[in-house]
Length: 76
Image 1 (cartoon, one colour):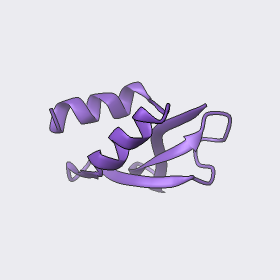
Image 2 (tube, rainbow, N blue to C red):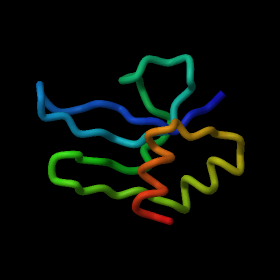
Image 3 (cartoon, rainbow, N blue to C red):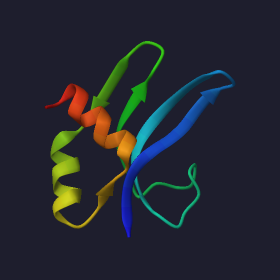
């Protein structure tokens, strides 16, 4: 099963995240099938390709709760 979830990057106590498409059995920071966007909680910047998200969800991918909340908050 494919999931759209966050991949942690950055340094200690200054993380930022990439929003990726990945198999749910892979590690959190494993190799992504596709990169969909990014989210930086400190500078409040984010970019999500909503067209790719809709396409992947229609093909059976599931969103994690965090990614779902990010989409609701900024792209409703």
